[in-house]
Length: 111
Image (cartoon, rainbow, N blue to C red; front, side, top):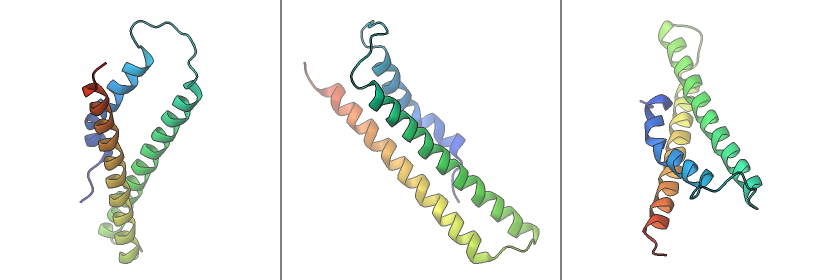
């Protein structure tokens, strides 16, 4: 069974903390930083990837429900969509884990 994205959202709190830390470093004002365009691009890509995973999980659930209701849906189509949703969720989870691991490594560095 594929876990739904809303249950995974609390696990992304580390990413939100990292984003908040980056946006407000030590009382800095609204000065533009050289990496602002890259930050926006990364945030956009991450949000897009999360949306794709959520859409894949939703599509898998809809196909599964259609199959259970007896509608004309091929079993192999449902299985492929479920596997695709599971793999995309696992990939997103591993990316989140690597981001958190990188954040923790940076926090352990001595200045």
